[in-house]
Image 1 (spheres, rainbow, N blue to C red):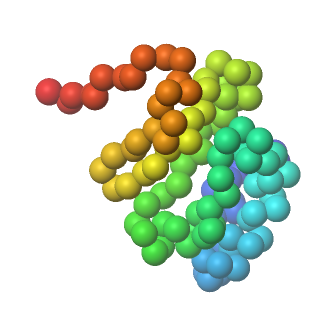
Image 2 (image 1 turned 180 degrees about the vertical axis):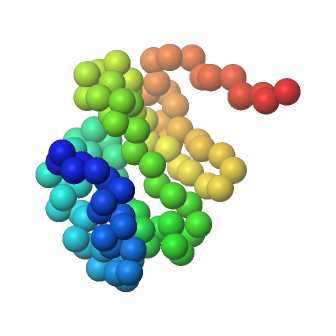
Length: 105
């Protein structure tokens, strides 16, 4: 991040409380990747470290996908998420047909 190894940030912050580390990281991440709100992403109430500690879910941001969204190659849709599914809020606004469920079989 910003030309420095991301692992260095995590090692340096591992002894900090999650809220404090998230407060430090938020402006750095905003500087590195910019605001995601204009792309349709909502800002979470908790930071990523606090989310991973409390919920056990690690938030992931794929920089390649983010570049495709910014380029207009991938469209974002508002969704309702729960632990086992995602539902598009306004499916009638989607121009593409619905995707078939993935089967690992």
